[in-house]
Image (tube, rainbow, N blue to C red):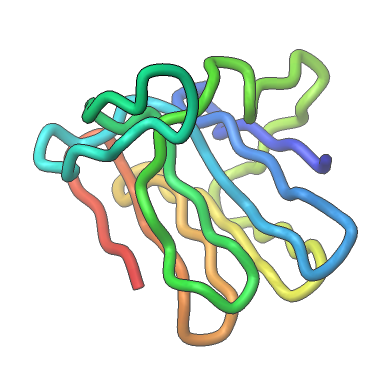
Length: 117
């Protein structure tokens, strides 16, 4: 995994490698994010605690274990910088949150809003 954290430590993200891989983030999801079904345990319908973009697929909200994207050694991805791993690129903006994309698919998520494609 290749990890990064937003400058104010609101979002914890990680790229899964090797290619084709995926990228995902956890943090305070927007209140209007749709509920998801846990893919482990009791398979309950819950509020998401993460968002994930898998190679060649649309982005989706997920519920994952608390440490999936958390790494204490992750370096901040500073505002305005980008990080590319494989075919996926992420950036962080103080107003719009984290944006990650691969071709026509991606996500933008902040505590207040989101966009998935």
